Amino acid sequence: GLARVHNGRRYRLGVMGGTFDPIHHGHLVAASEVAARFDLDEVVFVPTGVPWQKKGRKVSQAEDRYLMTVIATASNPSFSVSRVDIDRPGDTYTVDTLKDLRRERGSDVDLFFITGADALSHILTWRGAEELFDLAHFIGVSRPGVPLGAKDISHLPAEKVTLLEVPAMAISSTDCRQRVGEDMPIWYLVPDGIVQYINKRGLYHDNININPEDH
Ligand code: ATP
Ligand code: MG
Image 1 (tube, protein in one colour):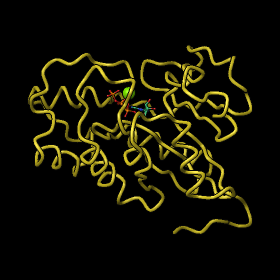
Image 2: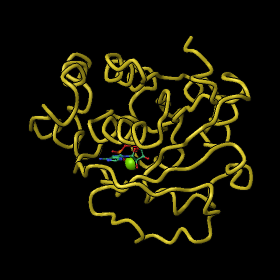
Image 3: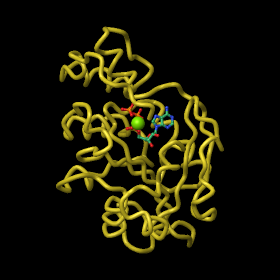
């Protein structure tokens, strides 16, 4: 594995949870930007198991989402992928993700959970919200059309939450799926290997109008 201690300081691990159905350049740019700004040693991408917020639509098999995440991150030595959420039975909750990673990586690692600024404002409704801030620092990245400060995060502990603007990329997985269903190109919205994987596995081609989500 990677060295634990760099120049005598604690190892800084970013955690990027997502459905990744499919992973796209918005995810990768956000992870790269947060890694640079927060001096992270590594960002681990964690594809969700059963995404309880998305039960309204058909989500691709965990193994396809996992493999796409591996393909998209393979060339970056600071990016890795974890199976903790897809291997844990039942719904995925962030508190379990963070506990599992802490168990795997040890107590001498600082966790930085990366999420959309929109999702961050709902954080106190997540299961185990009381424990979350003991487990990680939270970084809310702004997405296109979601200006920083538009969402009220004043109820969250200031020293545990940071908002960060990332180069805005108007890319979402919903849009990528819809484009595949409409025979529109997704080249350059996702890594080349993801275009090829989607075609090889025939993903999203039967994508009729699903409820596009706002995040
Ligand atoms: P969907 O359209 O199906 O909701 P998505 O594009 O939002 O998919 P997710 O897998 O739900 O992708 O996102 C994982 C995380 O990445 C979330 O915290 C989300 O806010 C963030 N994210 C998604 N797209 C972008 C983007 N273009 N720029 C920055 N962050 C993003
Ligand atoms: Mg989303």
